Length: 306
Image (cartoon, rainbow, N blue to C red; front, top):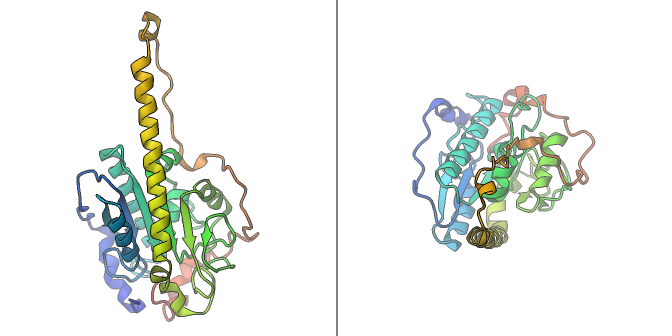
């Protein structure tokens, strides 16, 4: 375990305005681009979740593990400011990589605060004061994000379809309903690990639980991601073969060549209608969000990693 005393968090605050460091592997990977968002107070880099990311990369040739550069602080800057910076950094990393590598396959892993920014990025803001965070376009996520893995997410909602672990309680900042519904759209590729007793995702009182996911679930997660990668690769190959066959057999007539094409798709992100209702989500989904502003004063004494 690599817990960091919360007093050290202020040291990371200077990174809020720093230019992002160059990502390793500027060329397009043959395997996966694995983006990792660390937890509060962890040293810059991939943190504890990086051990699982490395395990995945070792199983899929041509993969690269890339840390998300964001403050990961509770104070200086404040937790809500750090979240906003983190979500923006993660979305930028995804958008820029997809633009540079149109055939890219991405996995996102987030631990604690890193899990919070990950879900905000793909499902939209978790609630006040961060409700203005707009999710990545749904088509982009469906076309390029192979898997999303969360550890100890403080916005955890119990009993939704993508839950893993032993928790039956909501986290300290339960996510708003609209965001949960958007997450359910990605339930085929999203897993959120939260165990009973975790202070932050389960509202528990066992400090050690929050940092025990990585060794406990490593093999299970590697198997999950590899299966998703294989399925994604097969689907992409089938789609490419079908498109090639259709192109080679098409007969172009004068009428066809002079037609105006209007089949462009406009992607609007989180406005899509969810395909499933929220399963077992608590009635008070928005409770707890007012605590953001009071968080530093209330929890500095007890937080080691969030």
